[in-house]
Amino acid sequence: METPFVFGKIATDKNFTDREQETATLVQHFKSLINTIIISPRRWGKSSLVNKVANIAMEQDDKLRVCHIDLFNVRNEEHFYSLLAQKILSATSSKWDETIDVVKRFFSRLSPKLTIGTDPMNEISVDFEMKEVINNPDEVLDLAEKIAKDKGLKIVICIDEFQNISEFDNPDYFQKKLRSHWQQHQNVAYCLYGSKRHMMLEVFTDSSRPFYKFGNLMFLNKIETPYLVSFFKERFVDTKKDITDEACYMIVNLTDNHPYYAQQLAQLSWLRTKEICTEDVVREAHISLVEQLSLLFVTITENLTNQQLCYLKALCAGEKAISSTETMHRYKISSPTSIARSKNALVKNDILDNKAGEISFQDPIYAYWLKVEYFKLYR
Ligand SMILES: Nc1ncnc2c1ncn2[C@@H]1O[C@H](COP(=O)(O)OP(=O)(O)OP(=O)(O)O)[C@@H](O)[C@H]1O
Ligand SMILES: [Mg+2]
Image (tube, rainbow, N blue to C red; front, side, top):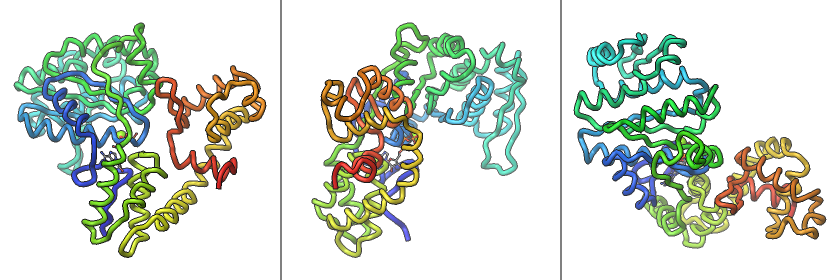
């Protein structure tokens, strides 16, 4: 049975809503080769947005090529260079002979080893001699610019989980190398994005770091309520079911506009609906979602310190002045330093989000579970 909602995969076509302004801006950036940095917590829709924008921009400009690189499992420079070369070659050459020709022309100091997958749909892979490429990465770093010039193309290189480069050996030196090459490119732009807000901000907004002011910063928000409400309605009606307005708003509220969870809770509600989805159905679906995730939440919670838990309890209870003596006493928080320490650690662990000093939970279902099941603050 085909279900009308998508979560955990890239949202496309009918599954994609909102983001009109971000889409228009980013399409413009891609076509005009403006570097862009996108920051948002996990699962708020970065990949879906970039994917949509890449398709639109390439449709509108047949000289434009976009390549996508994900650094989620890339832990060193050498791996980075291989992936970069591989994705650039795949995005700009359609045939094996063409790839070989490009490699012959644009690599003279490095001798990359090319392997082609057995299945013709498989991408090629590119390997370098580690020492060679680390000492001499210029040819890889300028490959896109050279190909673009040679073939009269424009290239946008999208790099996901970009903050991972801060964990390579010698990160500052590496970043300096990247920046010094990339800022000279005339025919290539970079769209760099990642989900660790604090790390991305460190890389791009600290004036002492190489990537300071590298491009336009874009902070992706959650999806706005009116879009979600009409999106749910449409998907239910398209599949010959219906949903009440109240039930739509309930899904939005329970998931705090979180794109992934909104789709997941809508899906669970849809599965429980015969004809019309009501608030009762959503309530049941929400209970089952919380249950489904509770084991994971227990594990997360077990890894927190007592002081972190005290701070989270105060947050869950909606306390505004947590550092007041009375509140600290009530929640057994030892000192303002402890609050600062807990806050930093929880942001680092992706449990909390710090948006210009405004602290919120990254995961609305975890926030609910903590409040209701763990701290038993409300029923
Ligand atoms: N524009 C959108 N409209 C509707 N749903 C969306 C939209 N963008 C994202 N989603 C929902 O959020 C989920 C996660 O989206 P996506 O993978 O694009 O986010 P991400 O920020 O790249 O996540 P990650 O941090 O895991 O890489 C999608 O599977 C979909 O359920
Ligand atoms: Mg993603």
